[in-house]
Length: 243
Length: 243
DNA sequence: CGACCCCTTGATTAGCCTCAACAACCGTGG
DNA sequence: CCACGGTTGTTGAGGCTAATCAAGGGGTCG
Image (cartoon, rainbow over all chains, first blue to last red):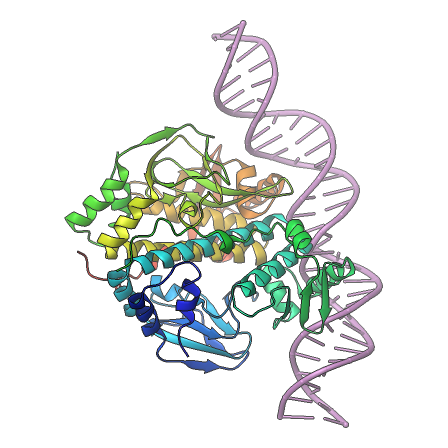
């Protein structure tokens, strides 16, 4: 257990011992949830956030017309449920795509981090902005590109995210999402997702085996989907000195 | 000149004199731009961010297929161009919708803020998260609601944002956007935006006079568009103490 | 073994886009 | 001040993308 957030952040900075300790202090308790569990419902009053230790999750919004929009897919090392910081309650639902292990911590702990570790606070701010850009990219994808590119972009994003996890072959992975899930990310129906994935497979851009996916030509897929790897070019040069 | 950011933040906190001084230090130079000016192009290398003093702006992404997606509309008091923080370059273009006045400042200044004013840093983080939620709402709008609701949501958002500016009648305002602009926000064509606005007017939800818009039944418009006023319920109780 | 979920494919429908034409408006320069 | 060109708003007709409806197959779990 523990150390997931520190490991993630150490991709961007060389952490001091004190910084690492401050981060690890957030990961002292761990809770596990089964695949499919709704860890937190939209509108639930809550004070805590989670650091994902293991497994995949997603956050989603329920619409008045009975539909659902998945906003973001989360991987180990991610900080999730941050909307409880800004509001008294959760703005989105958190759902486990696979069996997951999470470290919850109260938002007061984050206040301490802002006071004592300004460099880490600034880094978290930076990463929040980078995540905001990937949301912007998804808006552009859903608003202005055809179905095939939307599905392609999602696959590129997942691949890039997996690339940050050590040991993972980011070009070939188990995809624990149903086609309905993929539709709820990309603003499509499950039926149309099915046709687009078949089309991508027919064009030798991807290969499917059950729920396993392999990107056969990640380069071309990224180009035709308009994918930018935002996480690749993070700039940490402006951060304040560590304490 | 000056004080716009402090005034915005004072909606959420009672600022100390030192905090206010720290914020005002960011607004010492001011630059003006004409309506229609592209203040910053996507991919431009840059080190500075802007605080909007006066006027409306938007940030947008250019797609490979020649189209454009407007991500966010900005009002006085907004911090814009933050993507230069996370990347060496601008991830989106910044365009002036009206004549605008902006206060640029280097991102190093923000590092100082994180060191010396942890409470303000945490508040900026909180507001960034709230803004992230409004992006999530837009994703849901574009991905899962019909054209009429997408246009309605945009009008609700603009109205709510104007409500934060003092002196503004948020139910009735001059809208300095073309229908093509509105389409580029909502993922529609200008032609279809036109039809939806006509439909909203025919149903007595809005009233139009040239570029002036009045929301006749903001309540009903918000309901049918799935609008949540995220900026209304900001929680600042967790912030660290001021210095 | 049965029930359920998920994937797959076909047929039809609907919402939005494209193309087109014209009117109204605006800023510009003479 | 007016004439002009370009931009924006408006409306109609037709086409295409993706949704909807429907049915069958495979896999998994109880």
